[in-house]
Length: 119
Image (cartoon, rainbow, N blue to C red; front, side, top):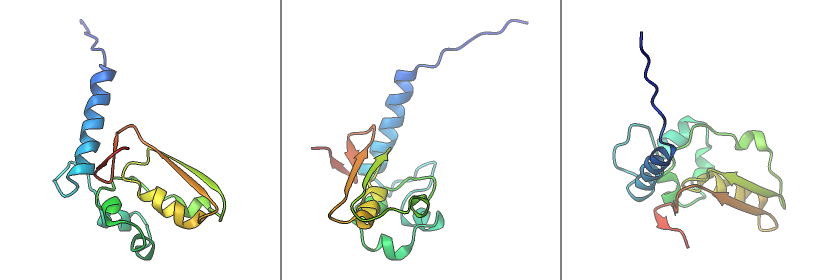
Protein backbone atom coordinates (compact mmCIF):
# COMPACT_ATOMS: atom_id res chain seq x y z
CA UNK A 1 0.00 0.00 0.00
CA UNK A 2 1.35 3.39 -1.00
CA UNK A 3 0.55 6.45 1.06
CA UNK A 4 0.92 9.94 -0.25
CA UNK A 5 1.58 12.85 2.03
CA UNK A 6 0.08 16.26 1.38
CA UNK A 7 1.64 19.28 2.95
CA UNK A 8 -0.59 21.91 4.46
CA UNK A 9 -0.07 25.28 2.83
CA UNK A 10 -0.30 27.39 5.97
CA UNK A 11 0.01 30.64 4.02
CA UNK A 12 -3.00 29.72 1.90
CA UNK A 13 -4.94 28.62 4.99
CA UNK A 14 -4.22 31.90 6.78
CA UNK A 15 -5.26 33.88 3.69
CA UNK A 16 -8.55 31.97 3.45
CA UNK A 17 -9.35 32.39 7.15
CA UNK A 18 -8.60 36.12 7.03
CA UNK A 19 -10.73 36.49 3.92
CA UNK A 20 -13.69 34.70 5.53
CA UNK A 21 -13.64 36.88 8.65
CA UNK A 22 -13.17 40.04 6.58
CA UNK A 23 -16.38 39.03 4.78
CA UNK A 24 -18.11 38.58 8.14
CA UNK A 25 -16.98 42.09 9.12
CA UNK A 26 -18.05 43.77 5.88
CA UNK A 27 -21.17 41.71 5.08
CA UNK A 28 -22.41 40.35 8.42
CA UNK A 29 -25.87 39.42 7.12
CA UNK A 30 -24.54 37.27 4.28
CA UNK A 31 -25.06 33.55 4.82
CA UNK A 32 -22.01 31.74 6.20
CA UNK A 33 -21.34 28.13 7.08
CA UNK A 34 -21.38 29.24 10.74
CA UNK A 35 -23.79 31.34 12.77
CA UNK A 36 -23.16 35.02 13.46
CA UNK A 37 -24.84 37.95 15.16
CA UNK A 38 -26.98 38.71 18.17
CA UNK A 39 -28.95 35.47 18.11
CA UNK A 40 -25.72 33.51 18.43
CA UNK A 41 -24.45 35.80 21.19
CA UNK A 42 -27.62 35.35 23.23
CA UNK A 43 -27.58 31.56 22.75
CA UNK A 44 -23.99 31.52 24.03
CA UNK A 45 -25.07 33.32 27.22
CA UNK A 46 -24.36 36.99 26.57
CA UNK A 47 -26.87 39.01 28.61
CA UNK A 48 -29.23 40.92 26.28
CA UNK A 49 -29.07 44.00 28.53
CA UNK A 50 -25.27 44.12 28.09
CA UNK A 51 -25.60 43.71 24.32
CA UNK A 52 -28.00 46.66 24.27
CA UNK A 53 -25.19 48.87 25.62
CA UNK A 54 -22.65 48.33 22.81
CA UNK A 55 -22.55 49.18 19.07
CA UNK A 56 -24.87 47.03 16.96
CA UNK A 57 -22.19 46.67 14.26
CA UNK A 58 -19.96 44.79 16.72
CA UNK A 59 -22.82 42.41 17.47
CA UNK A 60 -23.90 41.96 13.84
CA UNK A 61 -20.50 40.61 12.82
CA UNK A 62 -19.92 38.57 15.99
CA UNK A 63 -18.79 35.02 15.17
CA UNK A 64 -17.69 33.74 18.57
CA UNK A 65 -17.74 30.29 20.09
CA UNK A 66 -18.51 30.97 23.75
CA UNK A 67 -19.28 33.44 26.51
CA UNK A 68 -16.44 33.75 28.99
CA UNK A 69 -16.78 37.21 30.49
CA UNK A 70 -18.71 35.75 33.42
CA UNK A 71 -15.59 33.74 34.31
CA UNK A 72 -13.25 36.73 34.09
CA UNK A 73 -14.79 38.77 36.95
CA UNK A 74 -13.38 41.98 35.53
CA UNK A 75 -13.10 44.93 37.89
CA UNK A 76 -12.88 48.69 37.41
CA UNK A 77 -9.39 49.87 36.51
CA UNK A 78 -8.08 46.56 35.18
CA UNK A 79 -6.33 46.02 31.85
CA UNK A 80 -7.82 43.45 29.45
CA UNK A 81 -6.14 41.87 26.42
CA UNK A 82 -8.69 40.44 23.99
CA UNK A 83 -6.80 38.10 21.64
CA UNK A 84 -8.74 37.28 18.50
CA UNK A 85 -11.04 40.22 19.14
CA UNK A 86 -12.84 39.90 15.82
CA UNK A 87 -15.84 42.21 15.75
CA UNK A 88 -14.78 43.77 19.04
CA UNK A 89 -17.92 42.70 20.89
CA UNK A 90 -16.06 41.24 23.87
CA UNK A 91 -13.76 44.26 23.94
CA UNK A 92 -16.73 46.63 24.15
CA UNK A 93 -18.26 44.54 26.94
CA UNK A 94 -14.93 44.38 28.78
CA UNK A 95 -14.66 48.17 28.50
CA UNK A 96 -18.00 48.51 30.25
CA UNK A 97 -16.70 46.33 33.08
CA UNK A 98 -13.32 48.03 33.58
CA UNK A 99 -14.66 51.56 33.11
CA UNK A 100 -12.77 54.69 32.19
CA UNK A 101 -9.98 53.88 34.63
CA UNK A 102 -9.32 50.58 32.85
CA UNK A 103 -7.84 49.67 29.49
CA UNK A 104 -8.95 47.18 26.84
CA UNK A 105 -6.65 46.11 24.02
CA UNK A 106 -8.12 44.12 21.14
CA UNK A 107 -5.80 42.16 18.84
CA UNK A 108 -6.98 40.30 15.75
CA UNK A 109 -5.33 38.80 12.67
CA UNK A 110 -7.63 40.63 10.25
CA UNK A 111 -7.37 44.35 9.51
CA UNK A 112 -11.14 44.84 9.80
CA UNK A 113 -13.26 45.23 12.89
CA UNK A 114 -16.98 45.88 12.90
CA UNK A 115 -16.89 46.47 9.16
CA UNK A 116 -14.52 49.43 9.32
CA UNK A 117 -10.93 49.51 8.05
CA UNK A 118 -8.26 49.53 10.73
CA UNK A 119 -6.65 52.96 11.29
